[in-house]
Amino acid sequence: MIEYGHLDTDVTVDQLRSINFTDYFQCYQQTSNIEKYYTQYNSSIWQMFDDECPDFIKDLVFKVPQDFKNFVVSVIKIDPGQTIPYHVDKHYMLKKQFGEGESFRYLIFLEDWKRGHYYEAHDQPYTKWRKGDWVKFGTTDWHLAGNMGDDPFYSAQVTVLT
Image (cartoon, rainbow, N blue to C red; front, side):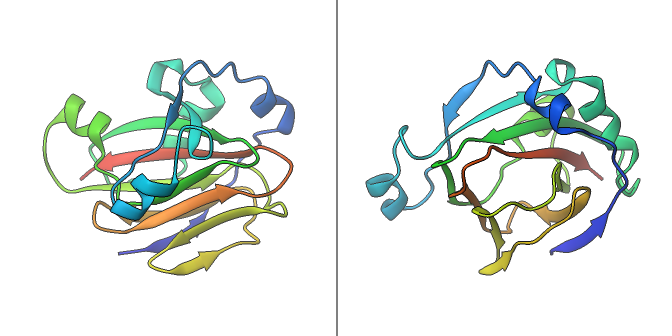
C-alpha cells in the first residue's frame, strides 16, 4: 500500500542545518547481500525521535492526513555517500510505546529534490519531489533511500498506529 500526497511546510534550510543530531547508526541489514556489501561506512544515518525533535518537525504530525490514533515523529539526515539499503520498517518505536496494531509511515521530504537524492518503494523510483511531498507506506512495503549527491538529504517521518 503506497500513497502519495503533499503538505504545506515552511521548514527552512537554516532550520534543518541547525538540528543537533547525536544518534548516528548503521541502517537495517535484512538480506544476505546487504549484510555482505553494506557497512557502517556506507549505510549510516543521523536520526532523532519525538521530544528530541525540534518543534518545526513535531508540528508536521498535524499536517498529514489525520487517519490515526497514536504516532511517533522522527527526522533523518542522510549524508552524501550514505545509503539506507533495501528493507521494510518494523515501526519499533511506535509499537514499543503504543503496542501492536496496524501501522503506517508518512515519509515527508523536507526540501525540494536535489541531484543524487533517491528514494524507491516497490522497485519504483521516486525523484524530483517538492518540499512537503509525502509517501505513505506500511510494514510490508520494501523500500530504500540514498544520497549520491553533495548535499545532506533531510526527511521527517510520522509513524502512525490506526
